[in-house]
Image (cartoon, rainbow, N blue to C red; front, top):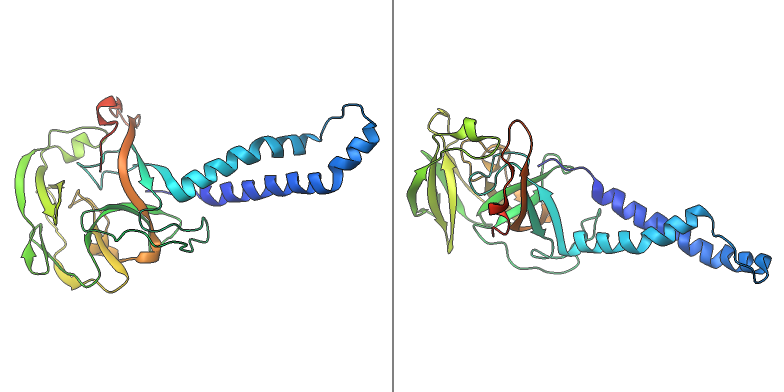
Length: 265
């Protein structure tokens, strides 16, 4: 999930507009009134813009930094759960409220659960936001062999659902993939495998304290913890909770799909 640093730009714009408004109020507004001597006077255009945009930008910053942030899914690594063109809402306080830009944690949140669909800053490049499913918690023994998961030496319950017929931009690439229902603790979710992919990452490991092991639901087409390691707790951004729109316009995509609106994750 590619991330443009809108967060920094938004915070900087809020600070700048607020400082302009404050300086004008303290130093220049009263002098303008004296010079006007009871007549109406126009504020400098920069001050007008600052006073107009500051409350709106502040509200947007509070909403997306501490409550909910929208993201768009650009790749098929979470198919069939999430498709290219899905727009999702991410709960920003689920795992604790953090300051924007600095990412300092202010409050304790709920515990991360196996099966959560989490957004996090990619450990190898924190300017990128990734979305994956949490598979292993700190201390878990995770095994993955022959496209099957085991957590703490217990195989995850799994059952075949259907063959993927294709949907969205990646319909041709993944057509014929097998969709399964997999159960992580009390969470049942769909996942997909692709028999055309000959190489499948196999191995086992122990998740270290303060870290999480994550995987994409599109198991054979996901760049995840099997290849680059664990997600540190402080890299967590939030929990994906719902799809609020689907619009895939690229490369013959499916366009607007109202049926996906409101899908819970």
